[in-house]
Length: 233
Image (cartoon, rainbow, N blue to C red; front, side, top):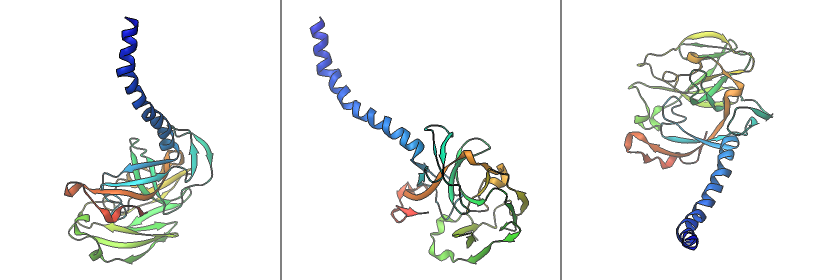
């Protein structure tokens, strides 16, 4: 009887164990790396258009600012802080959901907005009008979108306004508390951000989004957007 069980083990169970063992080892190695070093984040909404689209998968550098204990938000070491203009991934103070937004306010800043013009420490940012003709029309969620280049510190990037949508276009001034960051989406009239849930604590920031790895269009049967693959943010 014992020899028969041993034979069954060798013929059936052992080959399966040999097959799954390297997969298990790979998962044991990759999970901590993804938790503490590099991660990816699927973007389900258009709050960062036109910089990031629905269906983009962005690569997140979790070592951009610090080193955390895997699977936690506890810091082992810290060597940098988010800069104004960074695209950051963080946990929402409202419900803990992971979000991708742009850092517009640093600790101690005063942030306000007047008719979609962002002001930092009392100074309105400079904007340059941009032509929407170079973008696919289906990225816009309004028949009359306004597109501009926002000059935010050292980072120039597109922002979009949707005049036909109800939105919080004027607020503040709001003082950013110590150890907190004010986050906003680039699609200013279509973003649930720090205007609604407040500034984000430093220890809730996961890392910096650095690239669009791949992109699939959810409005067109998830067809690949090849032109967005490996696009830097």
